[in-house]
Image (cartoon, rainbow, N blue to C red; front, side):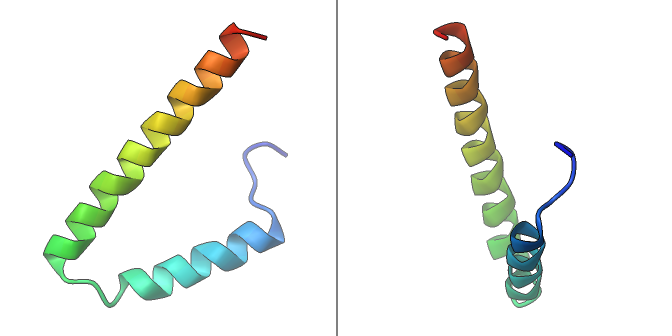
Length: 53
């Protein structure tokens, strides 16, 4: 299913959760902003690929 995570993705997500617990508030805020930036770049790439398909 497209909205589900694979077992490998679930495992990686748990690792990230464990790592995030150790971050300061400032580090967590920077992390969220960087993740959002990367998601936007990925969205742009997908849109570009679909437009040129």
